[in-house]
Amino acid sequence: MTDQSDFAPLLEPLRLGAIEAPNRLFVAPLTRNRADADGTPNDLQATYYAQRASAGLIVSEATWITLQGKPYPRTPGLETDAHRDGWRRVTDAVHAAGGRIVAQLWHGGRVGHPTTSGQELVSSSATPLRELTIFTDDEAAATIPPPRALREDELPGIVEDYVAAARRAIAAGFDGVEVHSANGYLLDQFLAENVNRREDGYGGSAENRARLSVEVVTAVAAAIGADRTALRVSPGNPAHEIELTDGGAAHRALADALAPLGLAYVHVLSPLDSPLIPDLRARYGAPLVLNSGFAERTPREEAIAIVAGGQADAVAVGRAWIGNPDLLERWRTGAPTTTADSRLFYSSGPEGYVDYPTLEQERAGAGEAAA
Image (cartoon, rainbow, N blue to C red; front, side):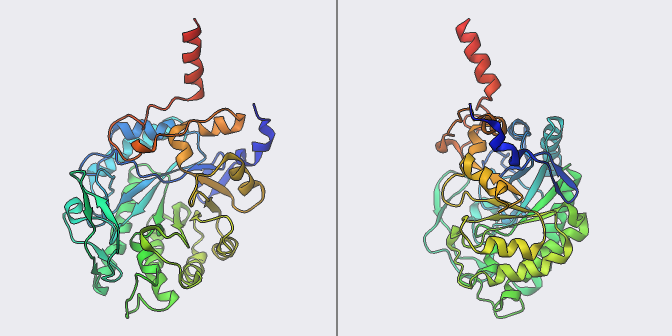
């Protein structure tokens, strides 16, 4: 077993606005496609999240704010009272297990398919994806059609969709919300020069491209409190054909505009060597959660170094939590970890979802076998 003293930095508590995280190892948002067909979370999801309640904070899988923004089948929503009630089962289970959980609010924009959402795709501009296909409700791979550019008079409605979902999240018992402005989805499509070709007040300059994200986060903070509002960004992430061609100017403009709010935290998905990390951290002035699993999974030693070295206040880890519901304990003690079966990441049912054992369960099973 590893001497647990090296793990001490990740065991320190951390104040995130109104949320008190008991440690600094968080669960990153992970799409798992286990919700009901209409987007209602179910008991299987309640079990999954509760199993991981030892994390300092759980960031929920990306959750669509409106059917228009639903990218993938069996992803959860926060648009209806049924969604709220389904999520209430999840948050109750997490809290009963001693955990904390925030809802990540999501609009897919040009990522999706009309057969999944029943609606046309929309984006900052009518800029099509070049090569991507997507799985639809019938499990078939389909080419993503070109999106329609959102009209300027539609954008207040997008902001209101985020606000309504945030209010519903708090009513569902979440400890806060994280606005998803990353990974090539709608808000990131406005930030990116190679997608956003608008010539109105939401395109062109860095400040204009950041404007929709600023309006969304500001409105959400006004509705539920800035101390329960967070933001996720991913400058430099090429997901869904996003290109960082402005040197991070739009991200700096976004940080400068939102800094006065006093957000609960900012969650950055970024390579460790990005010069934008310390720059954005200084500009936001909020606790920084870093997800370094940009191309490869984050190993234990890297997670410790991120916090111990002061690069971030907490670290979010994704894939390692899938196969290890008690990852905190395994990493604390240096115990062996399980590599999750990636073939089951986006399947349905309990296999590869809630059937990974904890250390305690493994030891109990070994004891029974020995007896």
